[in-house]
Amino acid sequence: MINKFPKIIFFSALIIIIAAGIFLFFINKKINSAPVSVAKNIIATNTPVTASSSVENISAAPKKLIAEPISNALARITKKPFGIYVRPGHSPVSPERFTGYHTGVDFETYASETDAVVPVYAICTGTLAIKEMARGYGGMAAERCKISGQDVTVVYGHIKLASVATKVGERLTAGEQLAILGKGYSTETDGERKHLHLGIHKGAVINTGGYVSTAAELSGWIDAEKLLK
Image 1: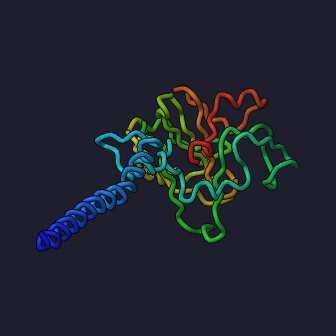
Image 2: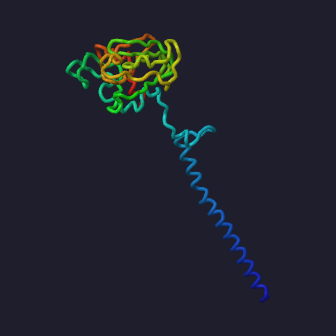
Image 3: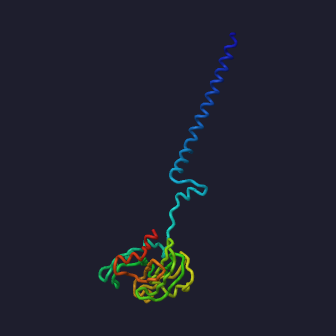
């Protein structure tokens, strides 16, 4: 009987050690698996995860509705934004020849671009409708296209007409070079500074007007600056 006690003690200790090991194993497994569950819950709460979902898709920025008509476009809007009212003696441009509410957006050039070639690009995919010399613009082109499913006509003013290789009726693709800017204070810009006037008129009817008499009439036009943001 005396010899049996050490064996009982040995087996009891062995059972306790095994039980403790199993307990620690499950505790460790539960701790390690917790962050994964939390991460899955965070993704599921913020954005539905589908077969095509990925981190890149979730964080991707929305696409702009139109292509830039000129490089670094937004930074160039410094004098005449959409809707500004001007008249001679009351304008960010001097001398001012026109009176009315600006139907387009003017994209200015830098001093270093005075004699440089400055490309102008089609803002949308459509068809070239007009290219001609026009009062107030010098060289001018108009394009028919759709923006957000709506028919529009886009006016590109103060361009070098001879640089427009696309023929009237031919297709233009968004981002495709349409022309280059005309030389400042020449017939190419009708005596205006070197810059791009871009007007977007609602509807398929071509309207090349750069100004309207009343603010209410601006409702027939679209602010290109807002589309580019």
